[in-house]
Structures are given as structure tokens and as C-alpha cells.
Length: 318
Length: 220
Image (cartoon, rainbow over all chains, first blue to last red):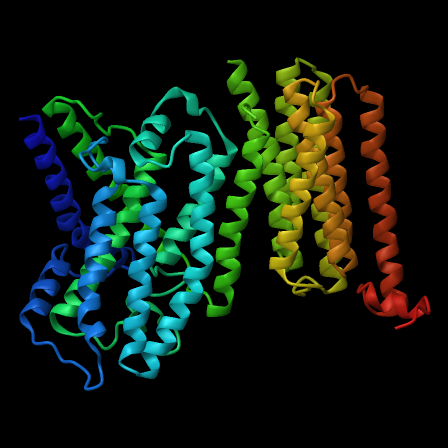
């Protein structure tokens, strides 16, 4: 019986992230539109877009290889697995022993690798530009992300997300400057990884500035639907990661009554909405930076993470 | 309670190091002056917290001196100088921000290693304070080395002095007289530097320090 409940909860979590992801994207778009005093598309628009794309035929380039057709599925699967490993409403799920933060970064990294390959596969110049820019951003964001993981892992004593969340929820955390620096660095990395505004504009199709959109320009139909869904999942993943590491209040423990699960779910929804709102406010209040400024922006994240590691060694428990 | 006191002191001193880095990151003079004011403000908060933690009321006076002179008077005066010299929009960099950041990280690591090894017997509060103070001093020196503009070199010097104050408050029992005299000597140094800036400008039509190397007849 217990095994069935465990499976059911893990399955619920996987479905939850899959269903929540387009909603979060729609919510951010809606808030952004309202802040610019536009009406904006309805909240459910991303779902409609996905359904419309699924109904359409796929148009393939003549010289596209089999990789081009396989990659959307690979990218979607990898992102979905990574997103469903992050504790959302309940920690200590059935697969939580695999929810190692370094493994999640590796899964996301392989998804990005395949997407960059797909961008170059069709042989168009836009795809090549998009891939090379994406890889440039990734080569700076990934070391920063790893440093952040090291800081938090050094403090929490584990790289497993459930243990980290439990530690962050306990009173041992105190007030640590390292964690503050790690939070800022993680936000910078999340903004860059999700192609949000100071680094890339998710709504643009202007040749000179687009990064992520240029890479997936050749995709259409159900392939494009999968890639868009994977992008929404990635955004949800980073938002849940920030919520789980730095605001782990309300996550129900491994053995819990149904009421605690409901509280966990409500707290999760609240946290996601709050972070999505903050993201929209941040995006409307800042201009996109030049591509050459991005290394400095991400370098600041790397610097903050390094500084956090150093400061950790002079804190209480050296 | 002891833990929280320590954590807040640690956080404030750590933010001082962070603001030093933000100074290194700025390449516009007016933004740099804002960062300098923030630096002094964080210093004042840190000193005030030390006063509370060590139960040493005279440190509050140090905090007020830091707040009044360094966070308000000197930045405003520097801003006036910069506007008078007409260089408030100037962008300057000797080498890239990234390299300066990496050097800065190296210096912070160095100061931590040195201080933690040297002061192994000391009170942990003083110990981490000294490590941070050394880091701020070294970052101030780095700032002076990497910038060409005389005004940003002055800012580097002043933030170096902030690091010294942090070190002095971390070590218990520094008399108030010494602190006041240091504060005033810095103020006088600032006035002298200000006058010098105008003289340099009058003579060489620039406050770029590289122009001076030519007049020293150093070989190119």
C-alpha cells in the first residue's frame, strides 16, 4: 500500500510540473502585459498554443538528419525528468534519492547540448548563430551554477535536494552572507538560462538579438510544441529550485497526513505565483543588454558564487 | 543569541567586501561615487553593530563619524569636483573588469588564508573581522593600481582606509583619540588631494595619471 501511495505521489508531482509549466509562462506574460497596461493574452493561452501546434503538420528541411527529428523528444524528456525531481509540495518522494543537484545540472546540460546540435543541423545561418550564442552563455552560466551548488552543499552537507530543503527549513541556517550571495548568483543564472530579458528576449524575432529563438527557428508542428513545453518546464524548474532552496517553508515532510500535503501544495502555488510576479516586474523594469555585456553579467554571478564559497570558510564553523 | 550577533557582524563585514567588489565593477565615475557612499554606509552599520556586540559605546562615535564624513560629506565633495572637472561621464578602465574581478577574488582568498592561519588563537569575532578588513584593504589597493583616473584612485584610497577602520573596530580596545585623529587625517588628506587634483588639471589638462609618466621622463 505504501509503495502505491509513493508511486502515486511521485506521479502526481510529475503531472503537476507538466501541467503547471505553461500556466507559469502564461502568468508571467499576463503580468508583464498588465504592467505595460495592455490587456494581454488570457492565462490559458500557452495551452491553446501547444494544442494548436500539436495539430499542425511538421515541416522538415530537406537536409535535416534523423537527429533533428529525435532531439525535441530528447530535450523534452530530459527537462521533464529534471523538473519532476525538484521537491515541490512534498520532500522525500520515491525518486528523491536521484534528485542530486549536480545530476540535475548534468541532465539540463545534455538537453542544451542536443538543442545546440539541432540548431546547426539544418544548416541555416540563424540556427548556427543561435547555437553559438547559447553555448557561449551556457559556458559561463554552468560554472557559476556549479559553484552555487558547491556553496549550498558545503553549508547543508549534502547535494541531495530533499536534505538541502530540510536543512534550510531548520534553525541551524541562521543568517549567512554566503547564502545571500548564492541566492543572487542563482537568480542571475536562472535569468540567463531561461533566456529572459536582460540576456535574451523570449518574445523577439529580431535577427540581431535572438538567442534561443534563433536556435529553434527551423522547428514546426509537434516538434515546436515539445520544445516550447520544455522551455516552460525549464522556467518552472528554476523557479521551483529557488523556492525549494531559499524558501522551503510549507514543504510537507516525507511521512505526512493529507492535510499537510494540501498545505504544501498551496504554499507551492503561492511561492510560484510570487516568484513569477517578481520575474515579470524585473523584466519590465530592465532593458535587454548587448550580447557583449552578457559575459560580464554572468561573470558577476560566478564572482558572487566564488566569494560565497570563500566567505563560507570564515563563518561560524570553519 | 551569541550565534545571531556573530552572524549579523559577519554579514555586515561580508557585505563590505561585496561593496568593494561592486566598486571594482563600476567603470563610470558617478556610479563609482555612489558605490563609495554605500561602502561607507555599510562600514558605519558594521561599526555600530560592533559597538553593540562589544558593548563599547565609543565605537558609536566612530560609526557616526564614518556615516557623516565618509558617506555624506566626502562623496558629495568628490561629486562636485568631478562635475567641475567635467569628467562625470567618463568611462575608464586599464584592463578588463573580468580580470580585475579575478585578481580581487585571489586577494580575498589570500587574506583569508593569511588571517585564519595567523590568528588561530583569537576570538572568532575579531578573527573574521580582521580577515575581511585585510580583504577590503587589499581590494582598495587593487582599485588604486587598476585605475588611471586620479579621482578613482582617491576613492580606492578612501575605501582602503575604510578597511583599516574595520580592522581597528574588530580589535578591542582602540582608544577613541586615535580614531578621531585618523578620521581627521583622512579628511585633511582628502582636502590636500582635492587641491592637488585641480593643480594637476591646470598643468596637464587631464587627471589621467598616465600623462604624468611622460613628464617624469620614464622610458616608454
